[in-house]
Amino acid sequence: MTSDDIRTRMWKALSDSPNVMLSLDASREHAEPMHAILDEKANSEFWFYTTKTNRAASGGPAMAQFSSKGHDVFACIRGTLVEETRKEIIDKYWSNPVSAWFEGGKDDPALKMMRFELKDAEIWLAEPGFKGVFKLLTGKKVDPEEMGEHQTVNL
Picture 1 (cartoon, rainbow, N blue to C red):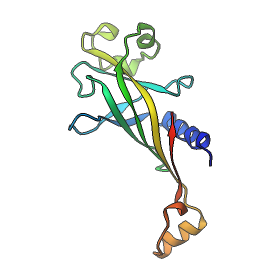
Picture 2: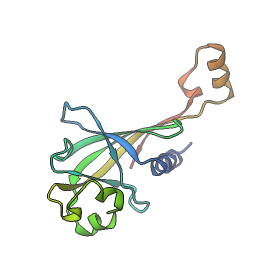
Picture 3: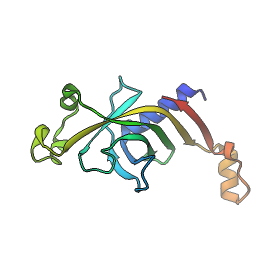
């Protein structure tokens, strides 16, 4: 499988369930669940609506952990969180589910939007072949390559 193929599979799985566990590299805080705002024309970044007091609000190098609904695509996405200050982007992705978190709407003083500028991702596709499934069912030693693809790709 090519890097493009595995990258495409990650984006498809992430668009089906855009929820990640996000953490700042410099923080000793636990990762927290966040809903990623994706744009099919922006495969090098995505966004999060959050508050100014959120543990990720300071930005910086970060990682987002992802597991697909079917548990067949896993990814650790690395990048840098920066404040999104472009009003047109804040407006573009605003929705009723987002507004439910902010009493003052787009003008809520607590609102902060973060842009995750992506660097790379380590991706695992859990697709065991017949041989891998047989070994799992019979308790035989399974080699990692029998369980699916694994690559680090640039984003």
